[in-house]
Amino acid sequence: MAGPVKSSDDRDLRLDFFRGLALWFIFVDHIPANQFAWATLRNYGLSDATEIFVFISGYTATLVYSRVFLDRGFAFAAAKVLHRCWTLYITYMFLFFAFTAQVAYTARVFDNPLFREEMGIASYFEDPTLALVHALILMFRPANLDVLPLYIVLLLAFPLVLPGLVSRPRLVLAGSALLYLAARNFQWNLPTYPEGGVWYFNPFAWQFLFVLGGAVQRFRQAGGGLPSSRILLAASIGYLLVSLVLALSWRIAWLGALMPPVLADILYPISKTDLDPLRLMHFAALSYVVLYYVGKDAGWLNGWGARPIVTCGRQSLQVFCLGIILSFTGQTILVQFNDSLLAQLATTVLGIGAMVTVARILTWYQKAERQPRRSAPAAKDAGA
Amino acid sequence: MIRRCLCRFLVVLWIAVSPALAQEAPPESCAIPDTVLTIDAVLPKVRAALQDGGALTVLVVRTANPQSTRAAMTYPARLEAELKRRMPNREVRVAVRNLPDESAAEMVLELKASLARELPSLVIWQVGTVDAMRNLNVESFGEALAEGIGLVHELGSDIIVMDMQYSLQTTQLINFQPYVDYIDWVTQNHDVFHFPRYDIMRHWVEDGQVDFNTETPEAKQRSFTFVHTCLGKLLADSIMTMALDPDLVNP
Image (tube, rainbow over all chains, first blue to last red; front, top):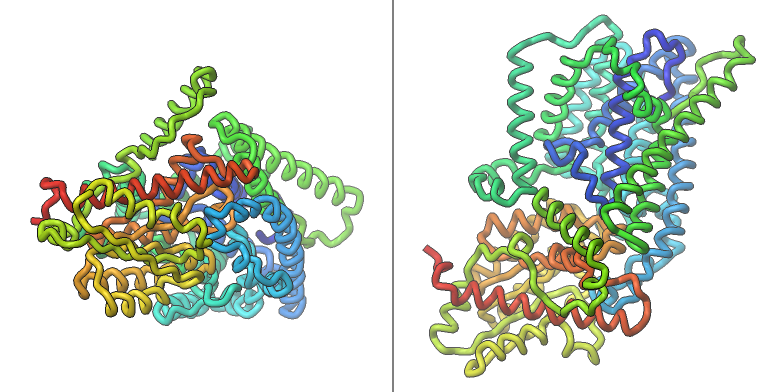
């Protein structure tokens, strides 16, 4: 989600494309009533759009801020990261209030004794003052608003690792892996409100993917490329196929019945909260296979078909936030008015259309704003 | 999933092409397709109790805080009535332990205490709502679940695990799915029956049999009665199948 690089020549469109795709998936997946969610990644493997999003965010953050760090020094780079965090935080607060307004509308179902007797709305919004204070420190959040707080804390800690990433990426990566393992082993996580809860995306675990993205950026910067190995490719494809069967077995009853119970004992639970190694491996295999076949200069990335997705990926913060609001609105519409298949299709298409439109307007605006003042420093955070 | 999509699609199509038929008052059917409710476990203690000719005692442990005037309409009371109707010559007792706002881990302690006082043939453990509402760690939730099931088995009762209620509105605010998945997984590992209330209610919602959007007191009353009555009936059906079906005898 760091700003796009200005010199469009060396811009890797794959970053924009896959991040844009992840944003589309996150939007669709966040509408529980939408059956078109079957089309998204999470149904066909162990990892999902979140992994892509966090990894690419780590990559682009490093791309942008390492340049600032090398040009202007640590203090300025750190200040710039913190400024970005502030923007994200304000955005999150805006989302929270937009969300709360919609919640107030939806929560009336708790008036039904069927739900009230078992769930008690009182305990959910027992103390609005306390809930608001906890919202400010990211401890209280409604379902679906989990990714942004994760991103905020990751970025907040980013200045601590930035100098290390630039000079010794391997060392930082090793430290990050150690923290990942320790967090999984000792069950470190941040708390939520109401008391006793934990963050749905454990930042101590997910930081590894973010740092991994950063380290990969540094390796590429130093001239490293994707190791080209047939064995690695075959192993990755094999792993993806096994994951595919596994993921399908959760949805298709007869396939599930074929799975030996021993397998379940060994594999499960595949924790999303703590970023299970199986998920991590799935993401690694997926990226390897995709990057193997999709080169940096793949022509179709510049084609008309990819353009809407690339545009969304380029404006990822705004599009992400819009997607969250839209998915909640879409869900409310489906719940309150009409949940026919046609309405679901319309919600999906209109939502993605809105995301693309807004992304295009933002891109146009940024371009137009830059044009008359060519002499101005170009390293401003434009997009997300 | 794909099959379910197709089914839903056909249902939608059917409703779309036959508005006249759809306008007619739908039958108050509790029927649930096999894809949603599958009996995949047995209840040896219940079976033994029935063979001995003794009383069938059931304990429902749940996180509800019901209004006493409505108690007779809730699923434990409906379950008792349904079991008595199916076995008129037998003594059937369904006791309820209400533990509002308690997490799975907290409920385990209560389970222990309750079973120490009186050992029922069957425990129906309704769990998960509080854990999901409070975002409690799903893995700890799974551990508590496994512990509770182990405890009940160790003390010598059968157990059925019941998951959360479903509505589009509540799922918009609370992320239930990871907890439902965990219940599915842990019960499968322990060969215990998972009564899929979440998917059952979802089926009713998608099928248009219950409607939580209409906010008149009559509509609320209707959905309340429908859900509790049908849950009681489906629970009774499941228990009878697991206790009596000769094909399901444990090897």
